[in-house]
Length: 176
Image (tube, rainbow, N blue to C red; front, side):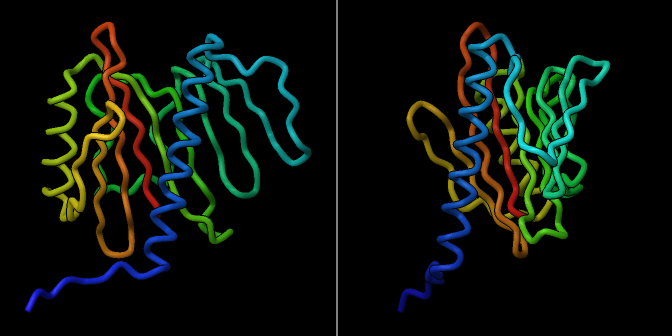
């Protein structure tokens, strides 16, 4: 008899929101790339603290979490130590973290690197396995390589695409 673990509606819903969240991050990154990396004079709602950092990045803070955008961004503060960090030599363009006290726990990063697509895919597959993650999917979707993994109650999604001109674009997110 085939013993498989069915996907529960809650797990499917969590994965759906992870994918939606990562898609929004990708759209923001693409928007920043096409606007020269500036949000201009966008209006922000009350309760949003906007900091222009010395490295050229901008950090947006609310009680729910923070987002840093720009080439001076770094890995999110709540990025788990057992999850692969950005590929060596990466230029981080986006970093976001949510506040665990609000119940919406997560972390995301988007970056570019000059490595090959194959080496970045191999990096994530080998690092995830070495850190005890279970790689649940490795697929090509719309010209991008998609890797999903789970560990304990966490889910990670990594989207890797050829950015052209010798660069690879990576967006990775973890539902904590």
